[in-house]
Image 1: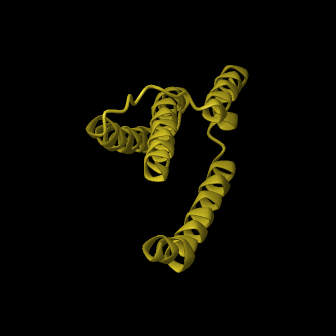
Image 2: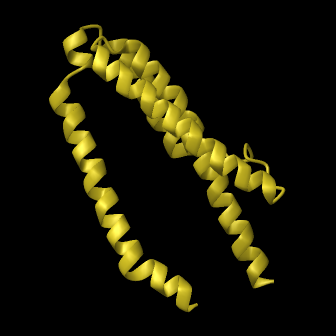
Length: 132
């Protein structure tokens, strides 16, 4: 019984990730449409493609296990998307929308957390999971 609960929890997490990827893909397309800098526009569109690929992989896993990929809507991502929509309507100046320093700072923060999470997974989480 405990294994089924773990499987259900895992599938629910994957459903949440599908929702995140789906919403992010839509938001990236809107941001690319609003961007005036050609390289920023290109990178956002490329990231959208990667996001859609990740969503498709998650969807395939869920479908393989008979789970509905659309069963969950991630509320946190939904709130972020709503705020992004608001910001895009407020910022009419290209320089404000494309401010490179802020975008670069956000990218660097994402890279740092990715490194930390990867280290944690390799050092503790993965070995603990294998030992269980």
